[in-house]
Amino acid sequence: MNPVQTRRLTQEMADTYQRALTGGPFYAASWLLVGIYGNAFARAPALSWGLLLAFIGLTVWRFLHRPLPEGSEVPAIARWLRLHWGIVLLTTALWGGLFCWATLDAGFGPARVTALLFTLGLATAIAHAFSMRRGFAFAGIALLCVPGLLLLWINPEDRPNGLMMVIYLVYVVISLLRSYAEYQQRLDLDQELRNQRDLFSRQSRIDALTEVANRRQFADVLETATVRARDNDQPLSLLLLDIDHFKQINDTYGHIVGDACLMAIAARLKSSFNEPGDLAARVGGEEFGVILQGQDLAAARQRAERFRVSLLEHPIAPDGIALNMTASIGVAEFDSNLHEDDDALYQAADSAVYRSKAGGRNRVCCEESALASIRDAL
View 1 (tube, one colour):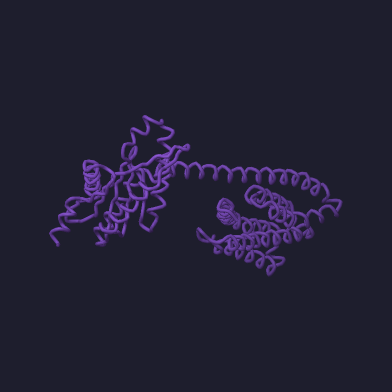
View 2: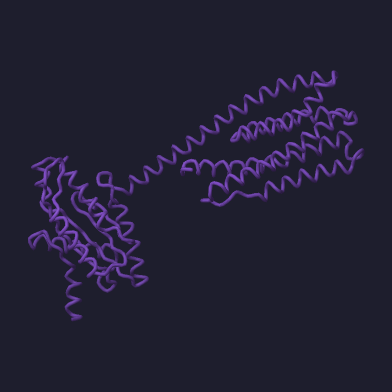
């Protein structure tokens, strides 16, 4: 089952629980009124109190049978729904038997009409509150009404009430079908809103052209990674990459070819920097960044050099135009003694990019302070 169907089933589970929870006490309250005004507790105390306790027990069972946690497997949710509907149908069957008793026993007096009205009211509640499953809802209405309806129809004196009940049940069935359609439309609308939210979330964190992380996501991850590296004394390196002479490509071949080149380079970055803790992002027009969590300067420089050579040796060919492209790359490693925060680390890598460009482009340069520290250590 796909994620959309799973979410719908999870929502149905939550709705079933909430609606069953609010409906349970009404069965006990309805029987209490019918039993008192029908003098049932005096005439048949054991049965009357037994019915009341049964309704209370079923209500408590509804409450205790809580929904499964988010992310549960579909078979488990399906089992939960079957059991909860079993509780609901058992309650309706119990009321259906009670309604038959009130219909057959003249000792209930005027309370027989009260029982009939409560039965129709409970059927209406099922049609509106439990429309998420038409089959179960129809079964619940049938258990509530059909046995007593047959008894009303058999007795000529009660047949007018039976006819009234039939007419009203037609309305209940129509309401159930309409409620079912509205519930499905609500689920569809919820899914559409979820899709829109996911789309907006993706658009806010993914570069639309290259499909890598955008500057916002890059900045958020870099800030978090810097704090983690400082607190846990873990290595963290940052690689910034600027495409050499990219403006000439746009001016010569047009922006369509230029965009195709950016997409191709982004795809290569994602392929080359795909280890756990890596994040490739587009941080500017033709500028990319790669966060390397758990990587020291030596490892980051080696990976950057490998990417530079690969880019140089494998031309990009948008629209059949073979373009030999190069990149100027700057690398810096976070050092709490040298960098106050993620902004300082970014500035260090950015300075290394400028030194790479000043040195003739198509090369990897490391942060000068880091190189000085290495020389001092030697």
